[in-house]
Amino acid sequence: MSQFNVKKLLQSVVVHNASDLHLIAKREPLLRLDGKLRPINMPKLTGEDIEEMCYSLLTEKQKKRFEEENELDFAIELEGVGRFRANYYRTLGDMAAAFRIIPLKVPSLDDIDAPEVYRRIIRREKGLILVTGPTGSGKSTTLAAMLNEINETEAKHILTVEDPVEFVHPHKKCVFSHRSVGEDTKSFANALKYAMREDPDIILIGEMRDKETIAAALTAAETGHLVFATLHTNSAPGTVNRIIDVFSGDEQPQIRAMLSTSLVAVISQALLPRIGGGRVAAPEILVTNHAIANLIREDKVHQIYSAMQLGQEDTGMQTQTQVLTRLVRNGVVSKETALQYANKPDELQKVLL
Image (cartoon, rainbow, N blue to C red; front, side):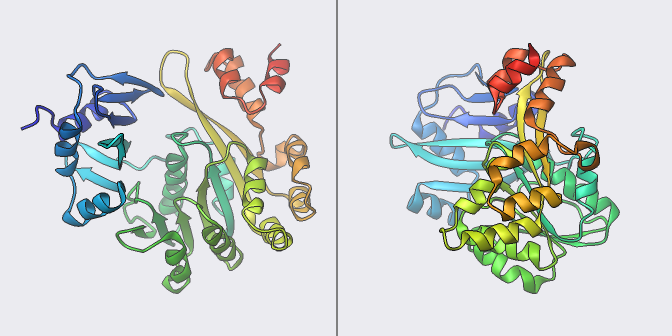
């Protein structure tokens, strides 16, 4: 029997207020605290230790899938401990695992200090709201807080398609249909194909991974649904480019036209280490107005950044440089940290001089 207990290790994630647990052969178990990896004071793991611990959490169907594909994504809830998103993989032949904690309590917009504009954009009846950023930048938490606000205030049917399902929302005023790719549906594209027959008001797409999913999301947003989705992009204008570039040249004019009418907002966020511990979100916010819609339609995406710097009082738009400047001047993050995370470090350096 292995001396390690995976449930105890997952408990330590909660106890230490960490975000992730890593199990990799020839290393001690590692926790991610405030964005940095730290070893747990335990012996180094072998591949057999990891296999024994990790297999104990799987169903027969999941074991079979992992053995066939050498990759497995799933979510697990441990009573009295918490809910986790897990990824199993192999490295140099040994099994390895990464677990991320998903809080059981769905956060509110106040919990995440959300800008007021978030409340405004989620009141829309239809359109596309994108939350983007690198892995671990808090995209899921931001989306969960937005859906929680709708759940508190409006009676809607919310359909989520995720791989795997992360936050499980209780039914308050809204009713939720949570669908996990691989368990409840074959793929994102498949789930979206049938979504229209399930009478949703709001659709959450865990990740827009491919052309088919992006096209289905745009169509849903155009046909009277409010669609929330994530993408791995680092800036708001970069997100618009990324969506258009997925399509071939002759398809792009139509996609630009669809995007110009259906895109409500792009929130592109990074999570930065705070001075004194903890982390703080720095969201760049693009809200589509008449000027932005024209730039998308006319293939002038390179001008969006300048347009974001204008007319901000009315729209709630902000650039990442403005957010980072505010965080540095208010003593929340250090100048070095801000420059390290900045999309435009030269611009930020000039402002902070």
